[in-house]
Image 1 (tube, rainbow, N blue to C red):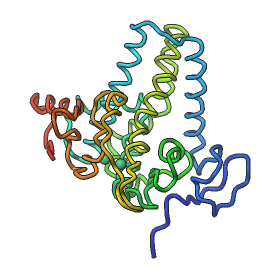
Image 2: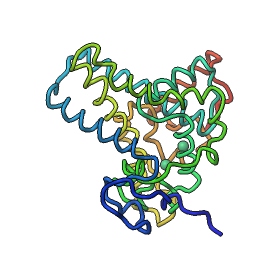
Image 3: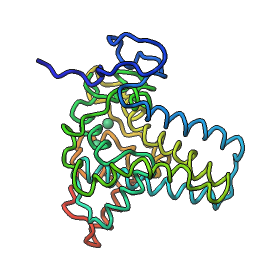
Amino acid sequence: MPAPSPLLPTAGPAASAPVSTETPPWKWPWTRWAKNEGKTFFWICLIHALTVVGLVLYPAPGWGMFGIAYGLFWLGGLGTTVAYHRSLAHKAVKLHPIIEFPLVFFALMNGSGTPATWAANHRLHHKHSDTDLDISSPRIGGFWWSHLRWLWQTEQASIEKWAPDLNKGRYLFFTRMQVPMLMVSLFAGAFWGWEAFFWIGPIRLCFALHAQCFTNSIAHLNPKVGPGEDSAMNIPWMAPLQAMQGENWHENHHSKPASARLGWTLSQIDLGWWFIVGCEKLKLASSVRRP
Ligand SMILES: [Zn+2]
Ligand SMILES: [Zn+2]
């Protein structure tokens, strides 16, 4: 008997309009969320609404303010690609705790979720890429499904099944601290005034969310492959949006997911890889797997 599709959650509707449980979630109204995902929907609405207000009130921050917001975004992106993705989800590199802890900290502060939730969703994505078991494929639910909607409209991958190794030990600290850390991430800028609040908080978090989601959406829209085939693509123009950290070389990654290197040539800039090489030279990274 086939496993039940995670795209057909058993959750009852938590939003206003009653919807048949037979309707696939990518056909739900945007305002309906899957079981336990109402908080995700609220969070995404909140940072978008505050971003609009912030961009209207403070459209042009000074270079100092922009630099702080971009620096936090950059560190969070590095944490997501190096720690969450290459190290924890794929075991392509083993990081020393003095490197892993701050990277996970900045990834979580960037809104990437916990190590366990991120890795569980991602391992499921690789195992079932672009089939109806893939919870974030644009080929199943369309662009906006893969870009954002799956985050609140389908039940997330089971941590017990997909990431039990990250559901214990020091990783539980981050699971327990996620909500307070996100509150600090959203509001801490207010200490320096309204402009800092908007740019260090919601505007940074909103940009970080979309930068990461481009990998699920745009990098999986290859029109040349058939239904059910892996649609991952390398997207060179996406590199600056992802801080040149390598996640845009997604076809490379899907073809060799166990490799810690995503950009395979010098022209395929992959700062995440060069960070790992630097850590390896300093004996702060080991078991580095190459393409
Ligand atoms: Zn992918
Ligand atoms: Zn991956």
